Image 1 (cartoon, one colour):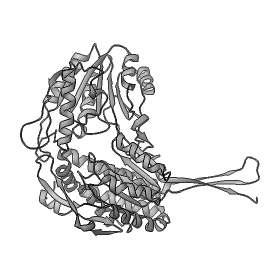
Image 2 (cartoon, rainbow, N blue to C red):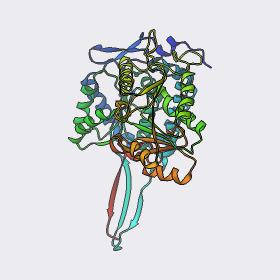
Image 3 (cartoon, rainbow, N blue to C red):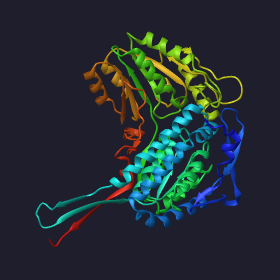
Image 4 (tube, one colour):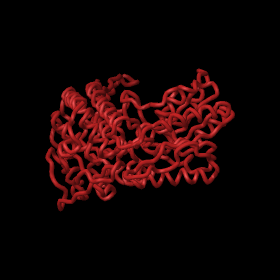
Length: 488
């Protein structure tokens, strides 16, 4: 275990913009403060980019695109492999940095560093597997040659809840495919991305391939780049509302997009489920990242015959979770990201209780500094409660009951979202039937975690477009070209 101090890990990060391989201040030397959500204290100040800074970053990415596209795939993969090794070697320091700016417990933050690194390892291996095709035309008079080429300069926007992994999940395939990038991390958690930029530079990534702009003016900085016409791809992870606005902006230049948007994950527990396993899975699906995850179980539907036992066991587990600053030993539940998050969770719980839900445990903020909310379990949550249709993004588990499989599926699918769902049953035919009928891009079948760099991540309906990770993840950064060969 590293003994590096909190001050050391913060001071080690360059706080300027990273453009064209160089660190530089924002226009007018503008900065903004980064806060520790566990204490409210200021960690440091980082550069606050202007719209012109964004355009400068796009110019750097555009200038580097041709040379980078011609870079040998093996060498692109080796850069990612070296970056993977550097991330793993600095897991302790980077995990502490993430805990300070985002709040998640240190053990979980270190786990995210390892998870983030795996995207670089995976796409290092995919860089040399970009293939094409060759075929005889049906009439025999020519040939079809198919190749895949980099889509071009990309704009990447990442959220605050997984500040390192959401970056590597986009940067990895872009680097492997031969695309240059401008990436804008969330203003709440810019330090992890700035640290990652430094690591990639150390790993040998050429100047201009990755450009990082940190800003509090997200729309003002991104929209000019989107409408500029030189960027050819936008990859966004965030809320569905923001995603809709970005899609509108991308329509002007018919920019290619991939969107990983909001979720409203149902968690179904049937009467034949292994209840202990279901509770274990519920704790993973609900409490990973303090509930601040698009994959978090948002609605629990439990068969009436086992609902009381499931609720009791889940309540016992939630009550036993230690709460505190993520740097403290044994802490499992850290702070939410900011006061707005606390206000939203409090409002949703209060509204459900007013509609008749019963609070079995929690249901309140924690006294003292920081954005802490008690792990909470509610039962008897009515369908009309707002938390059944809105992402909670906090440590709150609302439980409702069902009687039949059709009733459970109707409730699970009664949402505009379709990212992930969870199913617990020991009946194999039911497991497959329900998984196929669930309107989601991913299903956790008797397991509470679905994220894996080797698997395609993404949703249906208003949860997004495209997939990240897996063998298809690199396709989002490639264009297919068909060459008709005649004279044969």
